[in-house]
Image 1 (cartoon, rainbow, N blue to C red):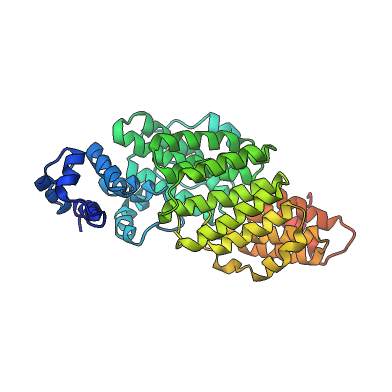
Image 2: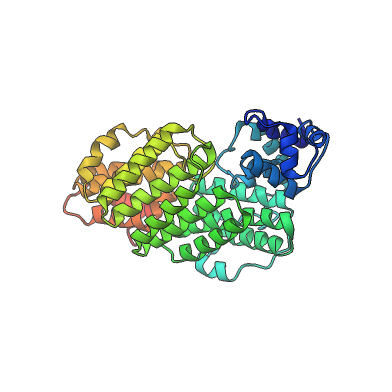
Length: 423
């Protein structure tokens, strides 16, 4: 089925809304016969008309946008690099395979050798490399590849490639107009989101800059999923600077603005509520934290998982992982033990999320004074994601075990291996 025919199939949603072709045409400036040709794929309409049709029929604009712009299906749903967003996106993603394979290093050059100089993300965001504009499908492939690196905890490689990717998306956006400019912003937003995610893991103030730029690009694109993802990153930066209440306000406001009845926006809403729950917990607002957690759990139960929509999936397993982090932050890790016992970490789809869940379990045991269980969880993190265990927060946790009152076999070697022990 061609893109025009698929658009037509979507527009036939008027049938379930009990609307006639004449009513649809009158609302959008077309005759009934023209609407019939659009629905059958025999008449192609311009972009503004397509968006008017989507609005009138209450179809998510990103669904039509993905079909209207060849090769941009993954970008229109925030470049789901971990996995595709919809089953019916598989065919369109395959069309991108050639572009992704050919362009996997075209934007940012060959992947750097392991011995390359580390990139200072704070400096790189203010001094982006000079690059040429790049075709949007190729940029879409680059975002997908970068998202996969993040999900696989390949942080060193991601740190090397992100500046070039952001630079390419920026210059491409700057030379584009109209719809192409919006699509370029839709590539730029998740690029900055990944920079914010990476900066947060490294405890870098660059997270503020990247999150702010991500949200600006997302709002320009007009796609609710992109806005939700960027808002989440900005709220995390707020929370880490001690502004938990402001973070919760931002997250709940964005969540309220999303349509909870649709699977993709409903999944975004669930993720925002989870981040809001943890943000409230860091501010010691127990009632708000638990209320948001329960709301998120209810939302997760109403909708099927939407793979690859975010780096965080809106599932009940993810809710349990957040529940542990919330209870840790509230100073009641004992309440998290039963949750940790039932947590099905192996059901989480990416190494990054599995490592994060095991990190929260390690923090729980550490708060309870059980060094051996803490170390066991840290070793699971290392087995899952070797680069994740070298993050500053985990090195500090390891150092606490090393210099703590209880001698634990293997900790010194682990500390040396992960950078927690000075050479």
